[in-house]
Length: 367
Figure (cartoon, rainbow, N blue to C red):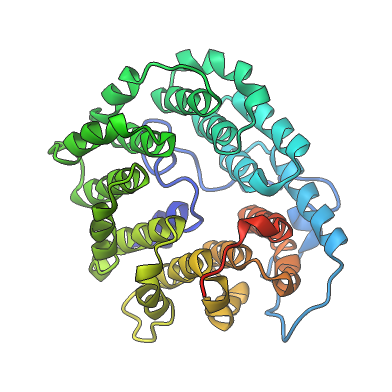
């Protein structure tokens, strides 16, 4: 498995929408996406990752926050759709006015992935004052975007027809099927349980076996969100997938972190701290991030910090995500250095992590 194939999953945002489909989005543009003070090249002209911090680095929280916001607001205007989508997603912890501004821009974006992320955020964060902007997306050329619009309108109290989502759930398009499951699970409407169970038993001809496993994990997550707790066993079992199916292990870890599954915490800790080299570095970092989502103080901080100086940008980006999930103010030091990274997606991940740390309500703890 190549780093390139893992990247979309590891950063934790676009597994479904950017992983496949007729309109793939490129990894990142070669051109700088900003000409302001915090641009990629002006911050790190030598093209090297930041030096790994030795001990705690004192930073001014207000200054770091302002830099993070500048980076994200600039990235929203990038020529690269992958950067735009990541930036909007990373603004979920930004001040509401700034977030609403970015989402409104994203809803009219030419790229379906950007429109999807923006539409989903309206429902996730109850930006219900913006629902009027969703109405054109009900007829969007992308059915995934239509699903996101239906979701957010439902979350904001509108009556919506769920029949289109049922049809999407049985689509032969793996991307659309996964996104429909995501939407139905987050809606919280138990009437979708039978539909999702039926979809999980569908053979799905023409889809690679590993892709089928990934979709089935998404279906299981949706069922858990709808109250079918037995489906947790399916997701927990996927953590022990073979090394050749590391994508499955990584997605299972991500889901268990999102679900705050305390029972599996020791398994995630063991996977994050594994020294046998049976799993790629990406999987260890995703597992560490899941630990941080469930019990922040138990994340293996030293292991995660070791990746701040990795030569691989996707590992530096996932490192930033993990530090943000942990929510420790001491992590602002290494994150401030990652804001100066040469890779725009690392900068965006670090900026989003800083905003998350500023938002103390985003961090939970298990004792």
